[in-house]
Amino acid sequence: MNRRPGFLVYGLLTAFVLGSAAPLYWSLIVGSHDKSVVTQRVPPFIPGGEFFSNAQRVFDTVEFWKALGNSLLVSTVCATSVVFFCTLAGYAFAKLRFRGSNALMVFVVATLAIPTQLGVIPLFIQMAKLGWTGTVWAIIVPTLVTAFGVFFMRQYLVDAIPDELIEAARVDGCTMFGIFRNVAIPAARPAAAILWLFTFMTVWTDFFWPMIVMPSTNPTVQIALQQLQSGYYVDYALVLCAAVLSTIPLLILFVLTGRQLVAGIMQGAVKG
Image (cartoon, rainbow, N blue to C red; front, side):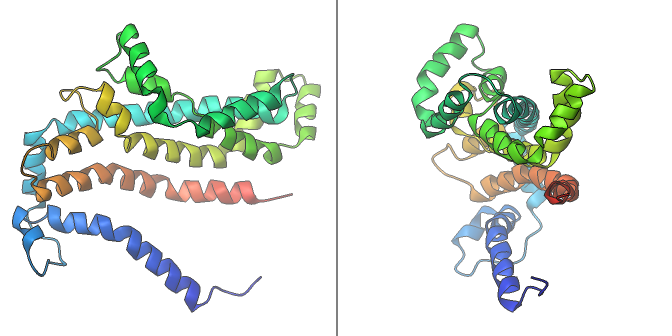
């Protein structure tokens, strides 16, 4: 168990990293040249010097600043809401004993098997009746809590919080919500960090529902990318430059939170 990883492990990890980074690097190459780069027999392997000019064309062609702002707002609000409500529900399913808890948990998990497309029409009708179509509320409200988040937090909290710790908090006079605030939330931090990042990425890259409910004048990032390639002729240098710009916030997020995320996971893995 104390043996260091061998050459094969490092080779597989290196191949995985290179394979994962290749699409982004190719987007950077095409986005930093003119549109003729995709027709060259031997494409360049070094980024060019036209990235900023292509980026300026992106902001002049579509409302990319508004799209970035909408995606940042929607992703942050949805990720924070999912973490709070799913941690609350996961704690209830994991540690509270009430009638029908198992049946309700099965029902929550069963909703994961229902395709999203089946609920689009009734959801759109509901958003239209509320007058939210064309606004960010139509994206935020349906994603305030997710079935996957409830199941994920429930599975984590089952073993992360000893029952004896909850009983000790009750003996000390802590209220039900006080136990959740002082016991469950600190124990759930590693899983909550993962769920927050996962939800943020999922909402940021979502295209199907925003395409239906949001107009072209109030887009998200993915809708703005679609607008760049909606014409008869597609300028791939422009599109891939915009794709790189839309990826930069996610890269910054991982750089800023990566160390804290790993530290939280390691802290949650310590036993005893």
